[in-house]
Image: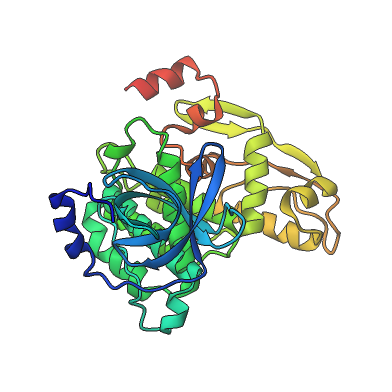
Length: 356
């Protein structure tokens, strides 16, 4: 046992040990030593800390960056990064306490729907860490939703919807991580909850979840009084993967024009059937023709000339509208004007209007 552990540190240990500890034989914790990752077995783990079987001997109080995952080669997707504080060490390894972000609500071994064995699996443990981080982030951008979010993510959503909602929150947090004022951004509670609810029903395509995450990030403002994203929540809820792929390609490739103060539009893109197939990922031209009409009905692209009755589409025009352009900008986490997002030079009239 390390004899240098202070009395104050020893006094804190019993309180942290009250959390239930369990073995998870397949769970590992990686730390970096120089340029090489080092794998440590996790002898036992609780909601407050763990004991690592390791040759390292970190001094009590030292902060260690760890990555939790299933034992084996380092993974990028199925892992969770966390900081921990060394508490004590002995001849077997080091006891650590997790340094959780404010508002995190980590609950291990509390699922009424899973057996004890299932809850000991690394994937289940990692899911709970991700849920806790999502709750922390959502509590920070919308403190009023703390209890609602905790209940939603811990008790109300199916596993499928839970994975989506957590992914949306963590992606949005990553987007805002680069914002200078990131710690002071706030979202309207009803907007944040509506985005989580709507986005949780999405397909398991993480590309679509990125759109929902962008919309959540764009809903955060320094004053927290903006609920303009609600209209885009309803719009995004009506679009599927195919629509978003088409809109993404069109908004990226179309030439943008300023048509009035604060107004932006595009020149129509002339796409061959092969272009549309490439951008949409679908080879069904009859279906694509129908889906383009649907997008025009929603107002995200301009109406097109219709193909003849039972005539297969060979080429078409696609022109994102101002609404479609703003939707795409917001779904990329942009919190300013669409003109700024697309880098379109403002006319004098448009610049004066934005200054007022």
